[in-house]
Length: 235
Image 1 (cartoon, rainbow, N blue to C red):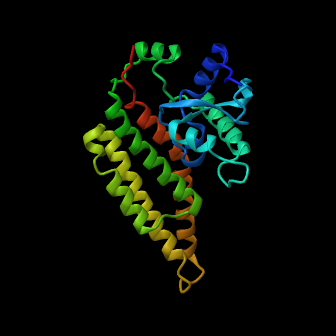
Image 2 (image 1 turned 180 degrees about the horizontal axis):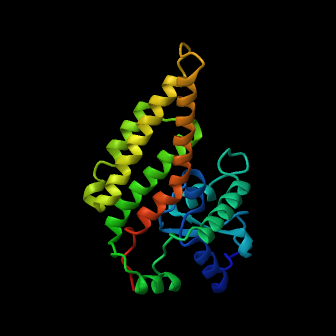
Image 3 (image 1 turned 90 degrees about the horizontal axis):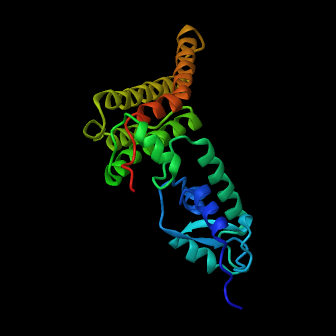
């Protein structure tokens, strides 16, 4: 039986909802980059073109998913549906997801005072944003950071001064210094020979304040980056 063509209105809805982000890339790696790809049928039935059965996947994941058999331990249809729904929710709530073909995004570019960027520069800048967000996530998950993680963050963001203004570069340097202070405080508290008393209490209070500060940085950090990251519109 020949493959049934996906109705254009449903095709457009999938592209608009996904903004051409691959659901599997997003679900496995939180990769929010625009991808070249195809629309896949989740139940692998090419004749079932209901909106709920469709998902946008990059070429690699489309080929991998289409070749999966029932005996395979590859990605399941349940996982793909879950990843797709998470992606749709993220795009609806994340104000900074850009798709330059999308009318609302075009309009925002026309009224924005931010400097517009080429795709190449955008990718370099957004990578530092992702590194910073991941670094904050590690700190909050472990309530500290290792010296290796702090040093790696310093190396990964060293070129920020050449990509962003001095204010953002200094902010990233401050994150690194605060993380180093958190590590030192954590290590002293973890010292079993440090007796219970004023010094331990002060250290515990300082660590709690540092963790509260890092908790607030997700929103603050996004604002710093938002002011300086935009894609050059393509018409």
